[in-house]
Length: 370
Image 1 (tube, rainbow, N blue to C red):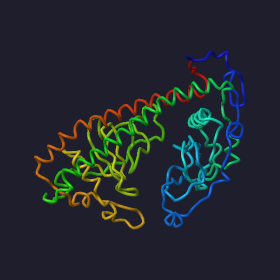
Image 2: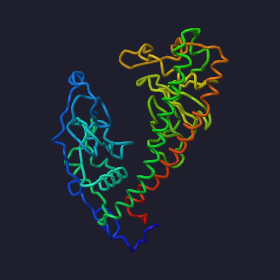
Image 3: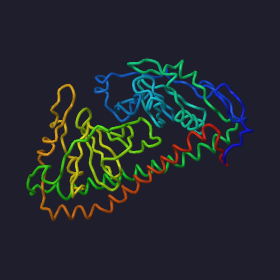
Image 4: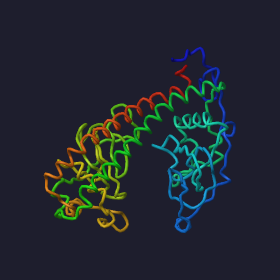
């Protein structure tokens, strides 16, 4: 329930709940930056293994050894330090792994506090603590100066964490289910078509239309006010705009035109593909999507400095082309799986909106739980 204003007191960061305090990272977590050890790409090629090697934003490689074993919170130190220029780039990791010198490594005394710190930082604008115009950096000294709102009662931290974790766990479950469904789809496609060498050869343009995305008229880094429509970049959502090129229910495939290529995004919600993408539409989207999963995108690259794929090259890419009756059978078989994936994606979007709405209110103490 909402907190009463009389339950707040003035602090250096403004009004905070009376039973909360303002701490800093050293008050909450231990820093293990001294245990980091960067490995060059050349060194990593000589040490290929099963242990994740983390950078500022995610797993860069897998190598033959680890430096950390357990649950940790990674905070980007340089390079891509923030999301949308405000919120810190965070990773909650667990297990045995190695970390480069591009991410700070923190650990709290217990999983609840570690998760609470993760959520608290997720809700914060850390841009005042980031230095460097060309190469953004969040130094350890500046990280240690970020004020953290912290309930003095562990039970409060636990309840807040539980609420947000339930939403995150369901989002992650849906993502894992979709990954499983996609793996099943790919296996069925290979069984029906790839293992059978008797089919004719055609071109992607025979069964799909390829167009270029467009530059949005207006864009924002944040999803706010009238900026609700996702702008689709070469590999992910890169911002938001005010209207869509494709509407909810349209089944499109988006891949990179310039820069990043080879990542396929299948989308059935209102969106605006950006001008650095190619958009593929077809009456047999399942077959086309699975076919494109098999593409060697490097062979399509026309750029030297900047990777480039043209509409014409994509249209002329040779593919297996079974009789249309076989493709229609595959589409019918795949339709229920596609429906599951679509429902999961819609639920992920809804749950993420709920979480993002609750996050700042819970982490400021303006909304109480329990």
